[in-house]
Image 1 (cartoon, rainbow, N blue to C red):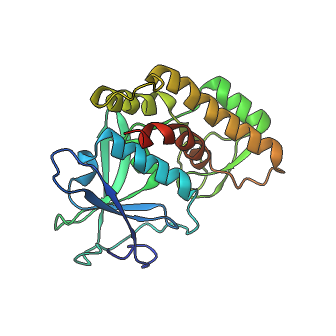
Image 2: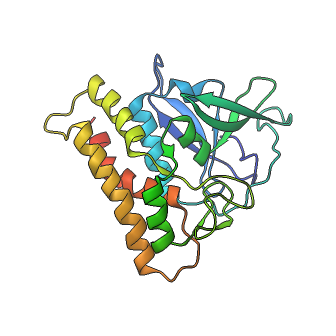
Image 3: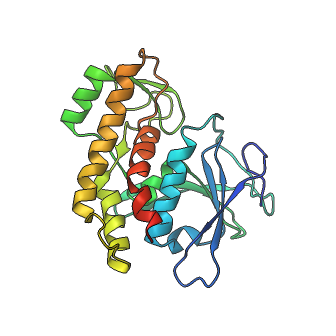
Length: 236
């Protein structure tokens, strides 16, 4: 496995199912830095089941413990990685790519954006967050965000965001269409459960803690929703 381009520790291997792949696809992950390394086009080759498995992995890892820098070198050829802006289904995300086509580095946050698993809170949700949670950690850089006065991070500009149950449900529908699970809940029922799990987790945590601003809404949502979909993935 390659070393993490950020902390230089050896990355962990995730073996996943890929479209048209006779062997499992191996991607590299660094949990402390919240980074994935994909060789070439591995990200777009992941099946719905694999995307959900990666989603669960993100939920288990929680928020990054290492502050992220802005420049990295390719773990294969050591050439500087180029920051790249891309769009998937009208959702903007960024990653760092190797000019020698060795692969790309992407944060957990932007992987979820690429898969359309993130959305901004509605006006009603933002009002409730401001009244109950008040301060959170930025999902992108970890800086504190004062929800009373802001809806985006003052440090890096990333907007406050939640896991999108509709986006996760779309992937569940694709998985269900490929291999229906006998007796399993239909994706629309799952969507309601996903939404409830995220909201309950965010506000249960807010009630349990003194407001310290150490909670990342994306990590909380990924953990809660990941637990809900665990049984569905295990049945396939």
